[in-house]
Image 1: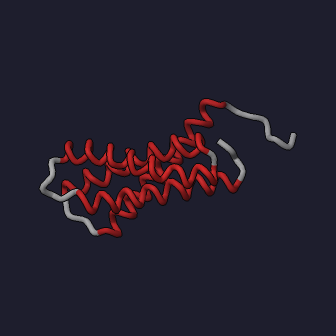
Image 2: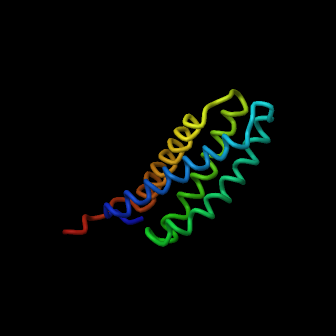
Length: 127
């Protein structure tokens, strides 16, 4: 993953947008009548499909492989979290947007933490 500000903000904004859209889409589909596990599984798959569709425009701007993995994780996480919440109680659209965006934020932070743990300490590029 690139550490330049353009790519960092691009990854962050892509995950926030995709998470919020999947949260909103979950609000459209899932109701309190759904079984929680079924809602989680179905919206995990739907979230992955939506993130695949939204991956292309973001990959043109920020790089294909650098955007694909975080967006897929965001799609899964946002779909699962929002749909399980909606299966328990009725929420508004704005609340689902915020939960989805928060899921996107959590997923990109986790990706950055794991990526830095795998890569180890790197010397600064200006040295």
